[in-house]
Length: 320
Length: 241
View 1 (cartoon, rainbow over the protein chains, first blue to last red):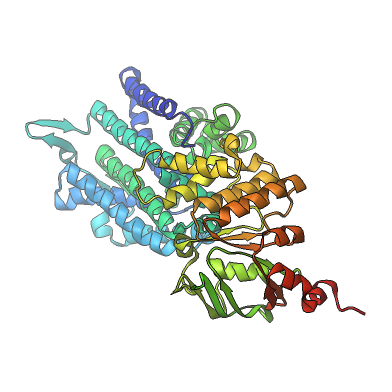
View 2: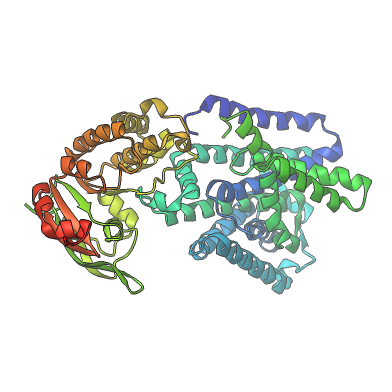
């Protein structure tokens, strides 16, 4: 892991970022917009993968961290009139704090109990959003007004509703999250996380306080997911309770499983794959979920470790 | 000389079974102590209590002058009590290198010491003869090598007390000779507490032997004294007719 060709791994990741950058200039308008959305959601998936792939903790409540960022940023703009950078930071801070609180409580459990506890907390969060409909817009959600979605540095200003600016902002978020994830999993701390996943008892007997290590991982994971949510609110201008529903807790799990758990690039591949299968299938039939389901079954049968996980296992052992 | 480790009235019940029953035990710094006894005598439970993997029902444990009875296992490891498992539990999917890197990086106080991890890992692997297998996944090593990897991980913690739970179980005779040399080497810098069934190994290595039976200490002494002890002979061989 830490020994295998660091230069190769970094070159690959920078290459992917460069490819996404280049795609901005060649993609037709529709796919351009779709890919911007996918990159933001891939950051969400990477945050999820941090905990699920590397620490082996399966959470069914990560929608709450995404939604904490979404509402933290969105409500700060709508009700407090904060500017874009401040609102983005507010979203991240909301997610980080929520993750710390949830981590302290949920990490007292393991395995199936952890899944249920995180799912329950996420449901509570969802219901709280609906309950305070006066501020959150309830199940209708809120629209972040277009004039507020402008990033200004002195005289120059960037309009986040402009497709190119939006694409590049999404790419910036994606790149930062990707490189941070890569740095973490290749670090000594990343090695400890994998050890916890493989055998927590043994890791304790090497002198590690596994609870603290897991708590940090929950906070890092929640913070990344919140950053994705905050970016979503500011770039796409919609803050809605559906993003806090259980569906958005399951989706990152699916994206990560498709792309390959515990691979840094799997989250992107899984998200792209899922979006385009839905996109293409829904062009042919209204029963597109059937096709998605069949695609998922085939993947589990033939690529049980996900697309990138299988590639790593069979051909490219050095992939991080 | 002050003992490195003392237990007073240490007990652990599993339901109605008293697996460890009021054990008073002392271990001097620098010695190699073997713990022997029939199956189910409470040897593994006893060392698990010392390492903190399980909590005692009553009694106390003093390590290096400090009461560690209620301290969690990971803090005991940091204090210098290392435990190698009876059932090999290396991280099978990680390379041998990464397995040893985990304990090495934890003992480094300077988090930025570049290269120090690699040096420490290779030193531990060389001591156990695994250096040329550093990049193999631990799960693909032979059983004997996995046992050695366990020891390398224990060594990498730079322990003051190294607890080896049946380290030669499943090793070939040729491997056992090397192993005895390794333990002698380790004992120069650490106190060794060894649970072992293989009597020739015990007789060659141990300075003193503690015999457990039914959760209690039956006898304690030098290998010669223990060998001559009639109670020990009865516990192992049954009463003479």
